[in-house]
Length: 438
Image (cartoon, rainbow, N blue to C red; front, side, top):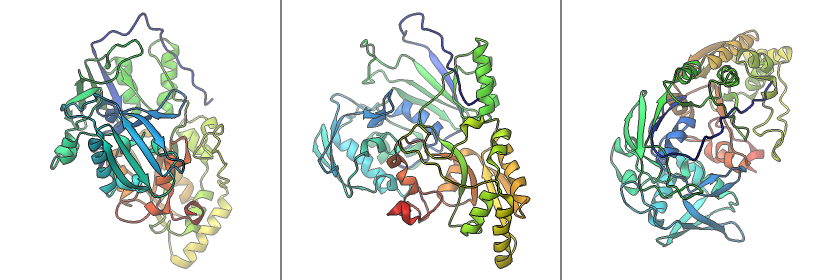
């Protein structure tokens, strides 16, 4: 079934400082500037090693101040007062003060890609070295939740002011590790930040480790193999063939296994609604009707209990069944035939990343859609370029994974029509929907 069982070993004693860990990631990232690069989950892994976000989610899944000491809203939620922690420095020795945070947020706001996430911020004002205020155009009750994401990670002023590749390849943060080297598609190595500001609940300075190495290993089974063989000590995955194998290894006592049972990303088909032929709603509806999600679960080895019918889990207060009808081939073919009679043959490009479960899924969908009279060209692209192509609109249909926010406001930037136009868009589907934008 879709249930997983955590398997962990009880600690033999208190944590000891020292040592290093090799952690395998699912992909490489195009750079480590919070204001300009495109971070998927692998980017966040390294980003959290180098930087600190202004806020973060706690063990109960609620936002809490992190690099910031506190967030205080006005009664109308249109002004937020942000107080900062005393004595926190970036790894280059400069202070994490209000001027640095203002520069970080202003740099995001000015960026063509990430700026849309903070478009509701109108002005950022430094009150004192330890305090700033953020004024918003519309009330923003969940602003701190937005600052748990990439746009809330704060880099040192020297990084934002760096020229050329240094701005993305030489990150400077206040986080637990300092970049030692980055060899793209091979490894990222960080060494302990001896002046890191955080301590554990017993007062021991963090981090415990002397160093950490992240290795991109794209194929999920190769990532598992690296873990089992001891080439790496930790991995992450969302791939169910890999998860099933990891659970078996954990049950045999070979590894420890911990599942994320909070709100997570969904896998789905993303249509570029601004690109023919899927700019025609009848084509989108027809392809949806010609899709059998249950068969897709089989080829990707995903448990049936994990079938998503919403961006939110069924125990979320925001859950609502999407109501989409699928697997009605006759109805889908009739819609597609109607379009073909008006416009001629339908050819669709269907993209994904080079992961077996993903390519197996797109191969199956190709069969399903071609049975309805559509020509389908499947493509595979490395994750970093896959993301870049998506935000620039260089795709037709993608097998996509997104929307892990526990609150709709956290995903609003991806859905609003305000972010659906231009050369770079966060509304990757480029969908302008009157109901969403109302």
